[in-house]
Length: 579
Image (tube, rainbow, N blue to C red):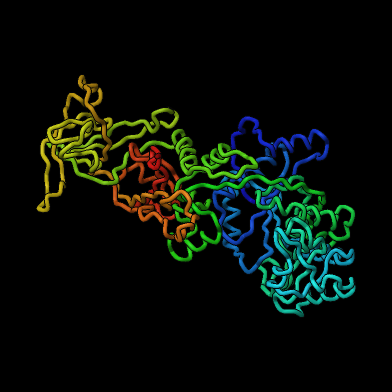
């Protein structure tokens, strides 16, 4: 069991999709008295947004039907696995709002898998093969031609047991032999053409050390792990649909339910043994445009320093999205909107961004910040003028309360809120024109100050005293309203402006001889120095705000400090990529 409490998640209306309907039908027919699911990631990288769909589905179904969900690490390939990834995965699951019933590892069952393999050998359903990997591929055949049987396929049970035990003892080098299932080399499903069950790998394992030098293949480990844990519904993505016959073959031919002696090595581990026959059900994976989700490509982005790290806010990893300012509620909302189906499709990135906007619109307090500052001096105020104005923290929710915002003679405004030569329809500040300063009154621009290079460095103007809050002219109409921060009180901050990592919808498309590297967006990250109102600087790491008129921003979880604020742009107020 995990150590931390499960975050509270609001229970939505009853969800309806084909998997949940299967679960309802199975319960109604009495096939199960309790639902058991699992989330089985391989710890060879960080989880990405695609995994969020599986997490929400497996843990969600367990919660909705008063069942349990295990977190099981598929640690059968120790050469590619790292404890760093294990810690990140555990963190991601909890962050999304879920907790596991039992924390398991495929390696917990290595001894039982080994006994299961010996049973298959004794039953004449597995053999030790000496073919090289290249020869195995050659013998396998194609989709239109049957495969050929290995010359080692008809070894005796005694010889196979001897060789397998010697494999276990470490007598043979990597790749010298494999244990293969004896099924059907003419099967129309290539996965059933005597697939490998075990391979030799002299690699130290992070959990079992050097206790093993043979490791089970994913197909047998996954199927038998589900059976050992009594998983009722094994939910996986569509690419495993063709593996389902092999999944069922492994479960049926090992048959833990009728051969409990195979589970004796686990009794010392004090694991509850709920052996059962699980049912594999496939659903479409989550594909999003303007991104890549191949672990190989994500690893390359990090390794080649094309991004800063696995938790770079431009990455589709859950760690990256979290640092970008995505909330668990927004990701769960996104998964709900995508839905569960058997139809593969590509989801537009704007749906993910829209889910975040919808969540933060109600959940994020408002603050004022200026990211491209231009000084505005109100000359009719005393040089030492200083006051505190009251602002609501949220325009739609009084429960957020109110805050005091300092106001003084010198302000920072957005450079883009002033135009010396305004375009048609311009409603913000111009020379000789007026604009409303949010919550403070109406200001007029009287003078534009430039440096020797002709660049605008300062505006000088006046504040209409009759337009101040509570005065008779406070409601006088002007065309535009802009935000500001007091130059005397504002806190300088690093503002990181993030955007989509790729410029094209399908970065994986290599039809024109280009790779995803050629489609990187050079403007996906810009860092500027801006100013925030004092209360914003006091934000806690990972606290989100709407910076008025600018977008939603989050205090960086690693670099933000009250005396040196760092904010990441999570998403703009509107879809800037809309066609």
